[in-house]
Amino acid sequence: LDDRDGVIWLNGKLVPWRDAKLHVLSHSLHYGNAVFEGARIYGGKVFKLTEHTERLHTSGRLLNMEIPYSVAVLEEATKAVVAGNDLTDGYVRPIAWRGAEVLGVSAAGTKVQVAIAVWPWPAYYADKAIKLKTSRWKRPSPESAPTASKCAGLYVLCTLARDEAIAAGYQDAFMLDYRGQVAEATGANLFFVMDGELHTPTADCFLNGLTRQTVIGLAKARGLKVIERAIWPNELPKAQEVFITGTAVEVTAVSAIDDHAYEVGPITKSLQAEYAKLVRA
Ligand code: PMP
Image (tube, rainbow, N blue to C red):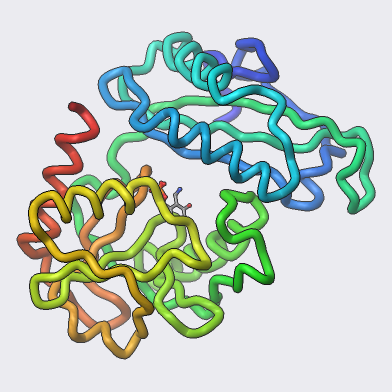
């Protein structure tokens, strides 16, 4: 991904793609305290650009990292980098990290840097349903990690979980939390259709995804009852449909969790269609 034409926004300027580099002694490379975002571009427009940019600021604040560019400046920067790469559909990756000024564990004295890159990234799973494998890695308690932050360090768990699932022939991991409750996939939130109602775990130790919130809104608007609650893995056989939501995966049906199969049912299909329509509206 580092060797291509195009431009990346780096600390206030559009620079050639290959020149968007950082120093090996950057604090965040050593201690995992970068924060990032993922948004999608549909028809030349970034879906929920303000919400994503505000979340980047919130993620930083949760790590006591003040991002030195306002939400308004970062939104303009995002539009400039989309235009500068001539992209109408794709993915946006803003990231903020601490520089190489000092390298103790304390971050005091580091300078925060920001980059925004965009690239084409077609539908993750197209319209295919995916299989999830229960992971041995558990989402940590909010008392152990800044779980509401899209913090790079937290993705160590996601990468381990996901790669183990893929090695076992699945597409993604099914993650429980520190209490043993159902949490999420590795980059997407989970929903279960149970007797015509939509059930989803309370987002109290993982990201309350923007797509999750959008899909809850779509479901409620069409009269579906949405219940956010603690969900335990022994309830899973009671679900008729399962799907995941996220910026990258959009609304993707789940055809199995471990060896329990699910149908791609009517509620999943209609929310998929409504989400696809909304993002291009
Ligand atoms: N959980 C995790 C761990 C994620 O990385 C993401 C993707 N940002 C999500 C959930 C879904 O969030 P969103 O719908 O805002 O993309």
